[in-house]
Image (cartoon, helix red, strand yellow):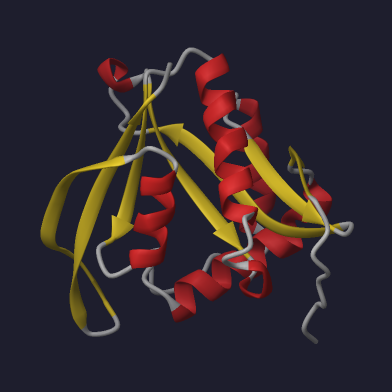
Length: 172
């Protein structure tokens, strides 16, 4: 059954275990129907319990957007690469329920995520986006991200090679 959403204000808060059914549903949709996640099989719902506990235990934020009392999306970041020299650079993810895409939910989530990263003293936020995802690229451009590279054919999904657009946002 599809969830009906009104156009109320977007609230942002930290994710709780009660939100993970929506987070999981967004993950499954992205894996099965898009090139947002270059994974062919979605994680089971139970995987997200450990994922959230590990993220929060390691100090990485997982934020949810709430519209009219219903979780409408989530955003998170963690260290871009595992080596110590990258500890000031983070890579993020943002996902919004289909019914609310294009209505400012992702922008609101991203502004909150950027604020959190800035407050933590992070230096740069990186976005890795499938080059055909022009909507996400445009969103990131509106938020001040700039394209620094397009890496051709580094991923494969749905029987075709995918290019990766790398974008960055210097944090104040």
